[in-house]
Image 1 (cartoon, rainbow, N blue to C red):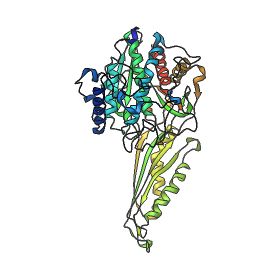
Image 2: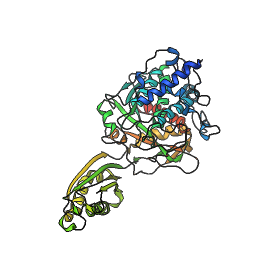
Image 3: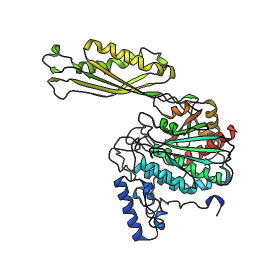
Amino acid sequence: MTAFDRDLPAVPQIFGPSHQGIRDAARSDRYAKDVAQRHRRRSRLSAVLPDDPSISSDREFDVTSALTLPSGSPLASSWPEAPTGSQPLPFELDHLLALRVPGLIATRRHIHSHPELSGEEFETAALVHRELSLAGLNPRLLPKGNGVICDIDGRPDGPVIALRADIDALPLTDPKDVPYRSTVDGVCHACGHDVHTSVMLGVGMLLAQLADLGQLDGRVRLIFQPAEEILPCGSLEVIEAGGLDDVVQIFAVHCDPNLPVGKVGLRVGPITAAADNVTVRLTGPGGHTARPHLTVDLVDALGRLVTEVPTLVSRRVPANSGLLLVFGHASAGTRYNVIPSEACAAGTLRVMDRDTWDQAPKIVAQVVRDVLAPTGATVDLEYLRGRPPVTNDARAIGVLTAATAAALGPEGIAETPQSMGGEDFSWYLEHVPGALARLGVGRNGPNVDLHRASFDVDERAIPVGVRLMVQTALRALAAAR
C-alpha cells in the first residue's frame, strides 16, 4: 500500500452491482430502503446516525440503482491516467485519481438524481461536507447550511488560492431516459453543476494527499457555492462568510457542451456577459373590449412593451456593447372580452461590457416610460441588478494555460468566445484576480445546450477537470510565492 492510499474510504465500483461492497445481503436491503426513505423525506444526509459501523462506512450512492452504467456505454470508457502530451501529476496522484474516477462518477450521478434548487442545497452541502471529512479535511458549512468552505492546509507561510464550484440545480423537469434521471419533480441539473461539484471533490481528495505528504506550497480553499442560478447571488453569501479572506487568486471551471472532452476554453478579459432581471407591471381600471376608449388597454400596452422596448434600448448604446433585452414571460387577462386591470412582463438584460452595464438601469427606465406614456397605463418597473461580466485576469489565464498544457497537453488549449450567459463568479473577481475556464463536456452526436432539461455530459470530463484544477492550484501557489 502506498502512502497516498492510507486511511481512504473504499471506492464504489459503479460498473458492477449497485450493492457492491456491502457484505451482508439482508443488511444491504435494509440500508437501501433507509436511503430511499431519507431522500423521500429530503432529510439532511449529515444527520444520518451511524448505528451500525459496517453500514455507516458505506456511501449512499453505493446502493443507488441509478449508478450502474449501461453496458457498452461510451461513458463507461475510462480516460487515460495521463493524456498524451501531458505531464504526470506529482507523487503518483494520477494513480490515485484513476482509483477515484468510478466514485466521482457515482457522486455526480447521485447529485444528478437528487438535485436541489438554489438556496435549498442542504443535502448536497451535507454530502460534500461528509466526503471532504472522509478525506481527512475539516470543511465548514456556510451559515445557512447550504454551502461548504474547506481549506486544505499546506505550508503555513504560503499563499491562499481558492477554487470554486457551484452546486445548485434548475427548476426544470428532467426528460432524459437515463438511470440517473432526476428523482425530484420539476428540478434537474441542466447546467453541469453536478459535474463542477464532483470535480472539486476529486481535487480535494488529491490535494489532501499532497498536504499530508508536506508537498502543498500554501493553502487551497475549496468553495462549494449555493444559489448561482438566482438573484441575489450565492457568491455574495460566500464573500460575506469570509470565503475570500486572505485569497490572492480564485479559479473555476464551467461545463461547455460545445467543446469536446479534453479541451479547455480560455480567454483573457470578459468571458461572460453581465445579466440583470427586468420586471414591468402595468395596471389600469380594466373594462369591456367593446369600449377600449373608456379604459386603458393593457394588452396593447403590453404588446408595445415587449416589442418596442428591446429594440429602442439597444439603440441607446454602442452596437459593440452587445446589449440584449429579451422578455421570457408576458401575461395579461383571463377572458377574451375583458380588458384586464393588470399585466406583467419579465425578462433579462444582458450586456458584454461593464460601462454599458453601469448605465443600463437608467436607459431601460427612460425607454419604458417613453414607450408606455401614451397608453395611460400605470407602470411599476423593477430592475434587479444581477452580476457583472466575468472578466478573466491575464495572469490568472496564464496560470490556467500552463495548467491546461500540463494536464492535457498543448492540444487541450482552446480559444473561446465571450458568452452572453451570466455567471456570478464575477463577484469574486470584483475582490480578487482570477479566471473562469470552460471545461469540454461535449458528447458524440448533437449537443444539447446549457439550461435545457435534456442537457447531459460525457462523464470522462470529470477526471479531466480534476487534473486541470489540481495543476491550476499547484501552479497558482508556485506563482504567488
